[in-house]
Image (cartoon, rainbow, N blue to C red):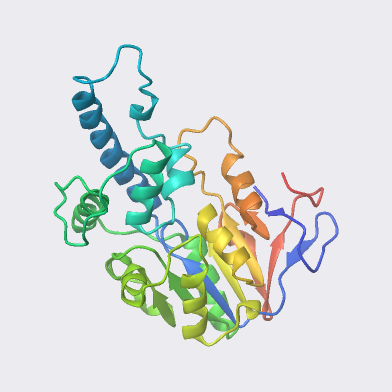
Amino acid sequence: MTGTQVSTPGPSAPGEPRTSPELDAVLFDMDGVITDTATVHALAWKRLFDDFLAVRAAEDDTTARPGADRSWARPFDLSEDYCRYVDGRPRYDGVETFLRSRAISLPYGHDDDPPTAITVCGLGNRKDGYVKTWLTENQVRTYPGTMTFIADLHAAGIRTAVFSSSCNAEGVLTSADVIDLFDVRVDGTDLSRLGIPGKPHPAMLWEAASRVGVEPERAAIVEDATSGVQAGRDGGFAFVIGIDRGTCYGSSDGDACRRGLLAAGASVVVDDLSEVTVAGRRLAVRTDADGGAR
């Protein structure tokens, strides 16, 4: 599938390449953009919340009024809940945002809460444990199109940075043997240390741009999550590439993710970074034949 364009500076005629402004750096999200780990996180979130909701529902059975609304106990939906409430967010933010959607309130707790604690931090740490276990048992894979694109950027003298809300970013990038491909890394440990908010706030992206030595208007963002695309748009970045890898899991609407990325502010949406070429210090993306959004 070819790239989907929206109205941004530098319009192209129908079917012609969509071209970015001149760039000094490209900033990459990690999960689902560089590494094939977005599914690992999605399934870990589903395991966490399905187990939590089932236990809470069983406990509630003893006190619930007949006919009481139990819709809050429905299983975690990979086609909606994941993309809307947790994808791309720091894990404690993801726990709070999802529970709020089900009108559930828990004590926040502390970063060192055990995974058995029924607190926001306890649940977040339980989910983190699922991911860490996966990482000890599996080799992280990368996307070939992304690797080729990064090599082309380096050849053009365009700097690269990686950002991630995950505190496991260093381990993931090391497992994938790509940690040395980036001039800068900003991850969940930095968010905690610096006390800056995660996506959809653009603070993490600004931090990455600052470390790599560029202004947002001279940098592009590559993201697969609507929260990250929104951060790129709100942060004033020159070009925001959304990647639709079909991560609206289980959705019968094949264009749901694509429309969500466009609505969040993507300059263009592609299926893979093999669709993006480096032309001098600009990025070029082949658009749909009609030149419009799908």
